[in-house]
Length: 452
Length: 91
Image 1 (cartoon, rainbow over the protein chains, first blue to last red):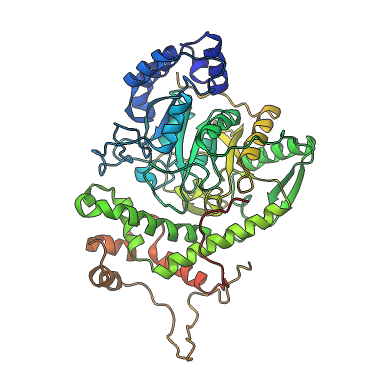
Image 2: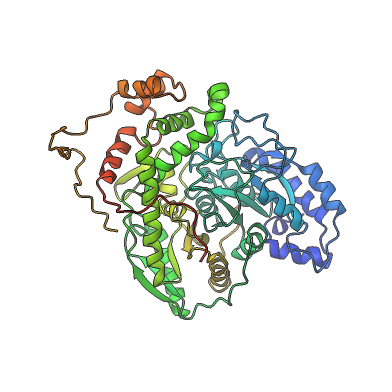
């Protein structure tokens, strides 16, 4: 089976399936063969369901009235329940946790006819943006094996990046879908907070968790969103002429790799030439936004994991235990104050959106760091690698605005560069439609990784 | 919202409403966290884990003291009557 097939978009695969040029069974086999060859190096999957996927595929007949997802093999981060399979969270703690039901997202994918093929590696319980996992190994970046895929949905990004499935579901608490997608040359999307159900997904932080998607195109994102969300509206025809795009004056273009900024500049020039109005906007102060996020995350994570700590506490990794211990020592008023800051951020962002339709930022300030990198230094200032990876994404988990990251160029070091578009609350459909239009108009094509 | 705190220095003197000077916010002590563990309930973290929060050696997340310093700055920001964030209302 060809490399082209392994890296084809859902739209392309669906066309071939409908025309009878491709069978779902042969598509499953294509990915199964690649997983057999590449999973040891990509560390993308930590459990597989290939036999059931084959059986499902062989039983399918695909007609013109069926969902475009019918017969499409996909994977999910190992936080999602799939009935009869272990949901481990990438941890020894839940190595025997067999799900009794499908997560809501998995159930919706099944109803649409998509074929589940396995569960992806991740940063243990989604605690961390580097995607490192001491139990299962750290997924490398498909463009450079010495670098990180990024996380926490590291296995999901690697699975797509290595051509091992057509789409993947992940979770995004501070950028854990969008950042690894950006670092691996994929499209990452998180919806408006609450728009896709988190039922049946192991929580990390209820206030910030979003179910998101990793795909090869924004058009594919639309197909997944239409299946995963409720009450999806058909958006008005997207157009760039007159589109008001906010460009943050503060924070988002600071301390970033100059080649990333150059790529975003080229994208802005394209948008201008297509008739969009690029408007400078002043964002709320984000000086303390990481503090606010952390103050909410850790007590919430502790509150969930408390159920396992007494009996299985020794099975957690050392760094996650340290984070949970921190969550124990924060004051209730500090947690509540942080939640009030989040509400304030939301109100301020909604005011920003009064004058614009979309916001444009770089997706990350840096390209994928080398595996094992502790700190990233840009413009003379150092920060932990995980903080750098999610510096431009985490704010929108707090404000709850939908956001999508798209590749927009290649760095001279051979790594992808990506842009982030952010939409209004419940403007998911318009955001994805506009991203699809930009994707089709602007040359977002980047070379495929050399994965063999 | 104006994010300028009323007092941007964590180390400024802290005077309560009765005009009693309670001095500066002091550095977190391991004994304080051991007291929280032993007297307020919660999971029985090892002494070494508590120590890591006070004197980080492993470089795990941000140091707790740094976080507390930041939170002390945030405490001085007047949020008016803004409530904690909840679900996002459908328009």
